[in-house]
Amino acid sequence: MASDSEKTVVQRGPDIPRARSDAPYLVVLSGTAIGRMFKLEPGAHRIGRAPHMDIVLDDPGVSRVHAHLIVDEEGAVVVEDLASTNGTFVNDQRVQRAELRDGDKIRVGTVTILKFAHQTALEAEFQRHLYDSVTRDALTGAYNKRFFDEDLARAMAHARRHHEDLCLALLDLDHFKRVNDTYGHPVGDAVLAFVAGVLLRSSRNEDTVCRIGGEEFAIIMRACSVRDAVTAGDRLRTAIEDAPFVDGDLVLLLTASIGVAPFDADSHGETKALYEEADQALYKAKRTGRNRVCTLFDDPVS
Image 1 (cartoon, rainbow, N blue to C red):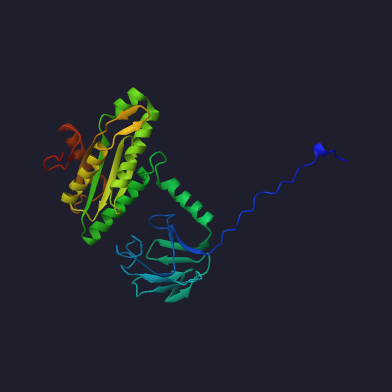
Image 2 (image 1 turned 180 degrees about the vertical axis):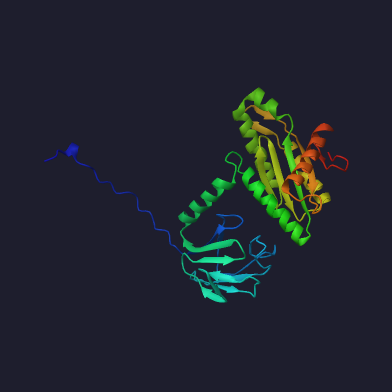
C-alpha cells in the first residue's frame, strides 16, 4: 500500500460557470478580410457592397444590397436573398430564403464565403485573437504591412468603382534614430507604441492606421478629399507635437512629417503608384523643414 506521501492528491478546481453558446457569428472564410468576425445581434443585418450596409463585403460579385439576415431573440438566423445579381448560396445550394444551422457556409459574390456558427464568448475571443495576430503589428497595435497592402488595394478598387475620394497619408517620426541611439531600442519601441496610440485615438473611424516599417506609419483615408486629408494630417501632426512622451524622468518632445497623396484612377493603376506619390510628398515634408504636412503640388502645412 502506498504511503500518504506517495498518493496523488486530487484537487478540485474553482467552479467556473459555463458560457452559453447563444451568440451567432459570421466568420469570413474566403475573400477580403479572411478571419474577420461579425456578431449578429437580434434584428436585421444587411449584407452588400454598399458602404452603408451592416456587413460590407468588398467583392465585385456582391451586389450593393445583396442579402439580409434576420436574427430572433433566441439566436435563430434566417438568410434571405434581396434580388442579388449573382445569388446567395447556402452549402452550394442557391436559396431565396433559408434558416441557418451551425457550420453552414454562405457564398455571396464570386469569392466571398462566410461561415455561420454560434460561439461562446471564449471561442469568439480566440477567433478575434487569431485575426489580430495576422493583421496587427504586435508592438503598436496598428495594422501591419501585410494588411496595409491588402486594404489599400481594396480601398483603391472601391474608390475607382464608385468614383469616391481616397487619400493615402504616410507619416514618419522626425529624428527617430536619435531616440534609439541616445536612449536605446526599448525606449524607441515605447515611443512607437505611444505614437501609434495617438494616431489611433485621433483618426476617424473610417481611416485605417498601419505601421509599415520602422518609424513609418500609413493612414488610408476613405471618402476623404485631398483638402480634408491635409487638414486631418495636420490634426495628427499637432496631436503628436502636443503629447510629450514621458517615461519616469525622461520627457521627449516628438514631431512627425506627413506626405499626402490623393487617389487618381487614371494615374494610380496599382497601389505602388499611389504609395510612391505619398512617399515623395513625405520626402518633400522632410526636405522643407520637417514637422509639416505636404502634398506634391501644394505649399506645406505646419
